[in-house]
Every structure is written in structure tokens, then in C-alpha cells.
Length: 491
Image (cartoon, rainbow, N blue to C red; front, side):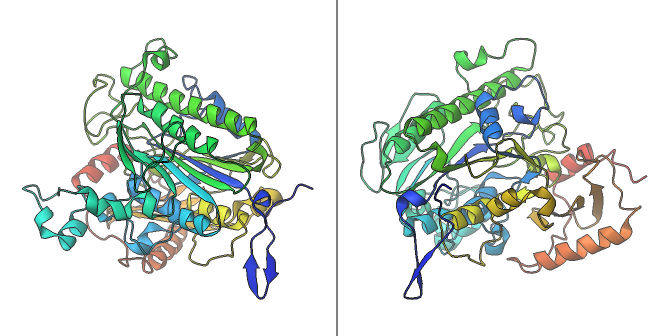
């Protein structure tokens, strides 16, 4: 049987890692605002084209009930990379950043274990213009005339950037401006990074940065690559080549969103091809996840408004879809937190696995930690997925998953989901037959709702700050819940 690294050699009472060749490589590919429907392997819509992601699914596992830890980018990234509920360190929403320096990322763990670590694309865990409380605590002079915005000099961001959080190589940026310490030819630049501006398509740039990192790797040390695409997030921009793949009558925002997802898909294909060319594919565990569900625009008015211009700035429908789930980005409804979620490791994850029990992005760090041969750490909130996949779904234990965001909180226990929207609106759904959350059955099962609410309160009591949100929904949340759940019934 092929060697792998789940064993530790113990010498003088301390764990010693196996040789580099016996440890797997890791890649996390993280998209931005890609909805549940826009993965071909889900078989939901016939206008989406993701042949390379479908290939990844065929070679590994599709998690039909895969979740992220927040319906918003920064806290979901914090949960993914630390492997901990971000509420443990007070990062419930983007305004409560940055990621505290004392929090250990999976890159920190792997860096210390001898891995080469690299990231490309969107970071968004540094202090930024909306982390007002943090900014004013550190320097009141950062305030502006807008109480919801501050100025944020790079000098304050740098200690919170990827280069200081366990990533040796980084190509940090979202659109055309990047801070990078290696170039697309694979040459090393200044360790602290150098500014770079490109005119190329952002998805292409981020793919090329990932490929450049991979070309720098050999068998001397294992590697971890975190590729965080800034797509299909607005602003919506796609090349004519990709737009031409989606002819026919459809909203232009949909066409452009699909084109951006297709560009990501091509990038995934190029990465898989390079791994095979370098004979690394069989020893590389690849995860693919979206950071939250698609924004559909209900906070603006009619969701998926087909008359909005493609170049409309600000929050609006990004062209992606969450069918058949209810809700969107920013909500703890399924459409906000259930996302495309894949894992592939040839020879270790059985090809064609369809896993229906709930998993969450927290499990990625726990799985990587175990697969790298590192000691178990009770600080990690996820579980190692590999032994579960090997044993089979029928033997996998049930567990509870939790969320807290703005004035919302939720828990999933088995097929039951309890959702609080504001302090007084409570809903219970049986996701086994109602994944679209169309029927609130709380009146039929008050005992189950009470039990789940108690679990949710107990979990929230251990977070920072402790407790469930008790205030009313804000204006945006009111519009969302009024639109998506105004017709939900209890009979």
C-alpha cells in the first residue's frame, strides 16, 4: 500500500514527522460569492459550464451539504484558515477584523512543520477601511468624516497580511494591484513584497500566480497552496472569449458571472494538469469551496434583476445563483451558507463519492493537520474527514454545526435546522425533505425547536462576546427575511 503520513515516529517522547515524500501536498481553492447552483456536478442548472471542477468531483468527493462558517467573506476566511469558529475570537463580521495576531492559521502550522506555503489572490483578513473599532483603538487619527469608514495605511495592514501569517510566498491582491514576493516567472522578489500592477484579467492573473508557485515546487518539501479567487464577486468583468461560451438569451449579469466561473474552472484544470505533469497529483489533497452563497440583490429590490447593467458598482446580484436553496449572501438561510464543496486525493478519497452528511469549512484545517502528521489540537473545531470518508457515510457520527452573524443565529443538528432572525423570529426546518426552507415546522415540533435553541444558546455562551444576538434585524436583514421567508408557512 502506498505510503502516507498518518503515522508519527516517536523519539525521546517527541513526535517526529515522516520524510517529506511521505507527506501530502495541500491545495485550497476558494471562490468568492459562487452560489450552490453553479457547479456542474450538482446537476441543478444546464447553463453552467464547469468541466474541470466536475472532473475534480468525479475523482473525489462532492459534499452536498457543505457549509461555510459565515455568509460573508472575511469571517468565513477566518474560520477556514484557522479551523476555528471565528466567533471564538470576536470576528463575527467583516467590521470586527482583522484576524487577531495570536490566532494560528493552518499555514502557520504547516510552515512550522517544514512545508512550503504560498497564497495567491484575495486575503481580506487585514485591517481595512471598515474595521473602524480596531482602527480608532489603534490610532484615532485614522477617522474620517464617515463614521463607517477609516483611512488604512499599508504599514498597519502589513503585520496582518499573508506574509506574516504563515505564508512564505504570497501574491496578494484582488483586481489589478498586487503585493507579491515572487513573480509569474517564479523568481523570488523582496521578502516583504513588491508592488505590481497588471492589465490582465484578474482570474487569469491569480491562476498564473498559483501556477508560478507550483512550478517552484519539487519533492524536497511538501507544499500548501491557498488560491483565493476574486470571482465571481463584483465588479463583474469577463473577456470576450469567456462571454462567447454562453450564447443565448439571458441577463448579462448572468452571462458575465458564468464567464467568470468558467475562467476559474479553466484555472482549476490548468492546476490539475500541472500537478499531473510534475507527477504530484497522487500526493496532493485538493479542496474547492466558495466563501459564501451568491448575493442575489434582495437588499436592492427584486433579486436577480435582469435590467441591472453589468458594471453597476456596489452590492448587487453577481450573476451566480443559489437554486434550489432559499436566501443569499448575508443570511443564515441555506442560500447564504451552503456552498459548493469538493475534495479530491487520488487513492485516498474514493472517486465518485457523494457525501450527504453536513460538513463545514472548519473540517479542512483539521483534515490537513491530521494528514500532515501533526498532533491533534483541541483548539481546532473541525473534524478530520479522511477516516470518515474511508469508513463510509453510514458509520459517520452526527454532529451539530453553529452560526452567528449580525442579528441572526442558527444550528444544524442532523437534518434539523433551527434559525433565529432577530430576537423574536424563530424557524425550524427539516432539511431532509425541504432543503429550500419553504416550510417552517416549528409549530409541529416545538420540543425539537426548544432543544436546538438551548444548544445554540450554550454554544454562543462560549463565544466572544458570549450570547445570542437579541436585537431586531437591521434594515437590510428585514428586507431579506421579508422577501425570502414572508411566504414560509407553519402548517
